[in-house]
Image 1 (spheres, rainbow, N blue to C red):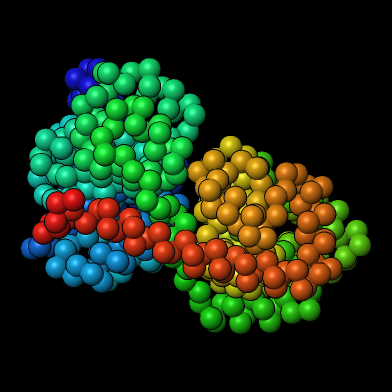
Image 2: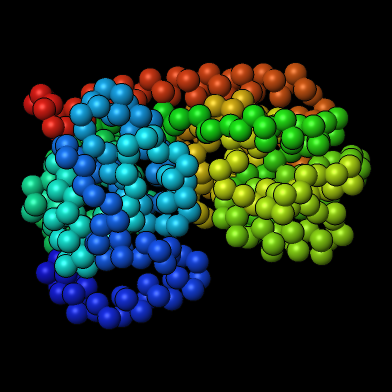
Length: 423
């Protein structure tokens, strides 16, 4: 099966090139860095042992930041390369990677392009997040002598069923990983059932998430503009959730005419469409990307910029974390928990279920399911500032506790790192 896959990927090179060009037109690829997707390096390789960390997109790459921070601090002799596959993750890494760490777009899974990438970077170790298992990338890396590990390894029910059906054919892919650090004990059982070796649960990388960066100037401007108003934040919304948020706003505004709802879309390029949706409902709108601040008459403030989520969490005391009402897997609630905002979480969070359950159990978050329950929860918190403060403090405690799991993850990876002891 793997041989057929590699053969097809090689033969379809011209079609892959055409697909990449179409993605440029949709804003899904960076034209200035498109050659990186063909395995052509955009930077020189540092003259040092190199650890390669791979994440699919924004959430997974952000989850890697605490681990990268530890590697840079404890093993300054190592070079760090991070690969991701999306434009938004590249922009996030440009802002948040520590000095000296390098970002590149991951090559498309075509054998010749993968070999070109590996020949230039020559990583000693590859650490991948979750289960972004590209067959050529994995098997070519293993063939080149790269020691591979999965961290925060997880598979959805559907992905597990598909891989399990072909587990014998996929055995070379699974065998390429020397160590699998699962995101939970239940996920560890799934990877063992597929035939992965040395599967452990030692901690959850997303639960060890780093606090988001906070621009104090932005916080001052936002808090000044919304001072004295009832306000809540819908963070990381996806299509299908904005309508629910506006329905909740209408329910709340019936008894709170000065209510301000802040909507921060997961993909800022949706800002214009969200603003038009709100305006179509007769709501006064301002947009962050237009350098606007909410005026006293603004009902909906669309925060359609990158890199300011930490400032939003720090400015607004109540947050509904979206991506949890539509089937996109949910987003990591530990980042807003660090900021100390009372959290509301929808039911669809399979990618972050453990962290969500820990926050709910600690009294730091409350579950919601639709516009009515969001409006009820936000309304109750707006009427009870003491409850908001208690939830915020509980959220910070959970976030700090989660950071301790990073120690166990680093210890489990140490034997794979250059110069690490066998264990």
